[in-house]
Structure formats: structure tokens, C-alpha cells
Amino acid sequence: MRPRTAPDYLAGYPLHLREQVLALIDQGRFAEVLRKRYPQAHSVRSDGALYDYVQALKAEHMRAAPPLSKVCFDSKLHVIRNALGTHTAVSRVQGSRLQAKREIRVSTLFREVPLEFLRM
Image: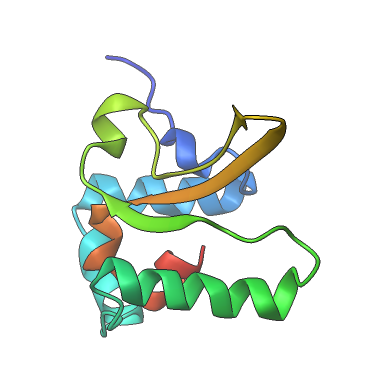
């Protein structure tokens, strides 16, 4: 029998929390506990709504950060990059100018989850 290990996304949490999560997963109660704690999904469903949501967060916490060109849900993200979201900056030369585009792509699985998970 293999020793059980916590999923990678829990690596930054304290050991006692990882053990609690593993116990809930072993008992088959993890989804039930999450649904009870976070019963309501958010209303951010479209790319436009996601862009507005991210812009509001940016205005609240990172006013001096450069503007974002694009914010969208990406259905292929977890398959291609094994990630829940990406923040990329692409620089292109256009004539004598350097043009920078900044994009945030969020996995589509975050469309159906509570707001606390999207905010994370």
C-alpha cells in the first residue's frame, strides 16, 4: 500500500490541516463539507464579468500595476499547462515601439465554484 500524500495544492498549508483534508477525502466527505461551508456559487459567469471582477480587485489592491489587456476563462488551461490560472506578459516590437500585453486566464472550473475559490 502506498503512503497517502496530500494533493499538491495543499503543500503550503500546515500539517494538521493537510491531515484533516486527507481524513475527509478518505471518508468520502470532503465534497459534502465544502458544499456545507460554501453553499452558494458566485455570479461571475462570462469573460466580461470576470474582467470587471479582476479590475475591481486590481483597483483595490494593486493600483500602480500596469493595465491588463485580457482576462478570460480558459477551458484548455488545466490540460495544457496543468494550472488553475496563468498571468502572462507578452512583449512585441511594433515599429520603434515595444508593445506589452498582460493576460490573466482562469480555468473554467472556477465558473461553478463559490466566490472564495475564485478570489483565491
